[in-house]
Length: 389
Image 1: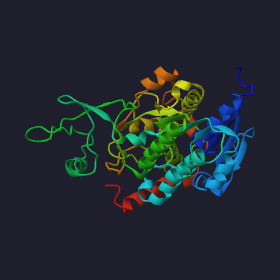
Image 2: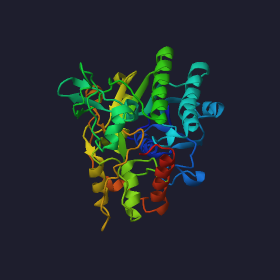
Image 3: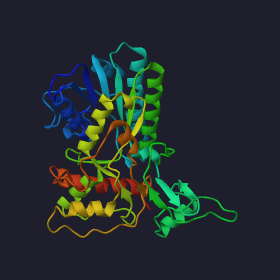
Image 4: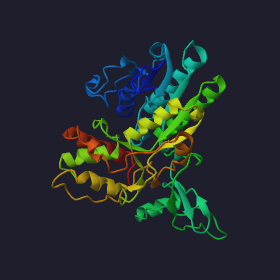
């Protein structure tokens, strides 16, 4: 079918007014899908509770909170495919907004699935947006013990390492006399890695995955789970202090502040551009070999947080020097990079944009001083609760 030709079946993007959802909506409309946006316009993401100016006018819009089951049922009427991107996002504040995250992420998902199980509907496929955070700490190699998954960086000898600013994980394998404690080499994470959520947010996303896949298997509804790594691009909400780290860096630099880097800044992440994430969603929709599967969505390349911060800083003349804080934030992992072999092999996914390409996409709305201030408020809230040391 040629691009722009009308495709059959209505598509609903639940959470479609947000960062990734709005870009996905644009692509769906452009590709000829009749598209409906369902979004609650959460004030933290959409100050004032108003639809953003970038919302695609060719898409139908319904304002609806997923925690309202009856309203969600009405909003789903006539849709054949659902992209589910709704919910609360963020590692840090999830650790003290526990009920909010459980309601937004677990209750909201349960409402959708309860509708699919108990009501008349036309849904034929669901694509769920999940997250790298479900993995917890990454995958590593020990020169003595091979593949290992290190201890959570909170208790025992791990905490002693933090106090001594030794940030790299050590081998947890037991020998006859003591733990191995060799320094580890990070490896890309594949979808089969054991899950070990380190935050309430991550725990709710793991619950979402299991709920969706269980209901999908039981009722014969194809479910595709996409685990996003660190997505960057335009339209990220600077009013939300738990938005993408590149956007936070841009807000700090724009206000003349030096961004806060935890640990030594040498922890690594996989930055994937939103355009590649949208492509992964379209492949998940259109390819039946995606059904019932979980896929990483990343670039497959590692970037240190310090490198990311410096790349953003180069966009600002006379930006302040960047220094690491040597502080540890609960819920953070040391290294996290995607193994994308599965999505490449099964769905022919090929990332097109590699960080720092298109880094200027984080700039358009980043000049607000309130944006930079919100990240400081978030840091202080965590510190007051003993979540930063």
